Image (cartoon, rainbow, N blue to C red; front, side):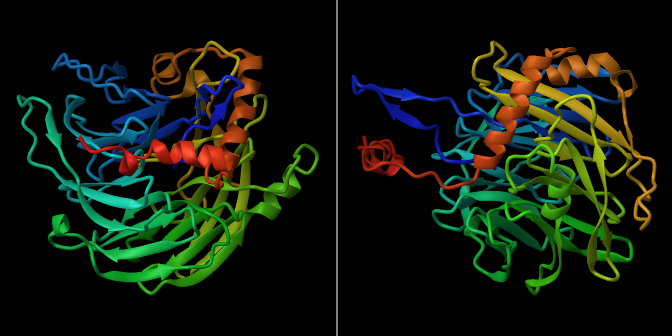
Length: 438
């Protein structure tokens, strides 16, 4: 997800001053639990869970492969052999997870807000701030090849609405896009994607605020699955995405509001991220301002969602900015972090926590044992935390300031900003389509 460009302010001397935008940290887990990646600011940090060691990006090639600006999207492919990162530096980097070499780099004209990888790993799709989805076809990796520059081909567009989430359906037949203007679009993924996707299957309409995240729930009894969406309207919704039919709505805002009645200054509880367990029985939900996660039960046969319980993280101001899980473990990985934290030397701050016991948590009683692992209990221990967090310990004051910055940034991330006429004119002069062609 991504909001508008960094705010521009004009001082008395008419010089333009750029206020750095706080970017939430992201986390992504290998589908077979082989590795885990955290992005905070322009830094991409990876830990090898199988070997219990940090990963040095591009170590074998000796190339400098880091991003130069805030990373806004990271994603493992379904088979785990491809990883994609993209963001504000207008670069999409495609990595092979065998050696963690950057095999392909794609330059874009606008900042990237979301990425997705086809189930067969043949195509990488990415969305830019103008609402256009682009597609890149991947050749078979050759570990001896030099970095290849690729160019994306336009696939589809929402036009002028930032795309917040991008997903392939479980069977690979559809690509689903969600945007800041409350829409979810289901498009047939064509046999020749480089020629564009022109057949719209359906629209899933019903949210009353921006759609922030998408996920699929499915199992062996329901392989086709259903779509789950989270929104700024404090709801999680279940859809039959092929028809666009809304199956069920779960209002999580009322539950979170009840829990936080003594400490919140707002009744606004946007859904910031969600993910489903591998058996499709539960959905983990991160909510803006909630120190923990909300667990929902998903009954695929009855096509319903219901609140199971809140797993609170006590003792520290931990508000997840991103969550993720794998297909082979019962861990929920969470990260809270920001870049460009005002007033502190730490430019990129991250904290990683893990909840265990996700499997078989669809009981109506909610009595399952969901343990929040202590630092010494996490896979990889202190070595992992040092790699993904950047530091083993975080000062309490810094942590509290980061929590407040996270609340503010997540609250304003997709709200359309209002600019004065002077600022609008300045922004127009900086647009790519207004620049003089050389």
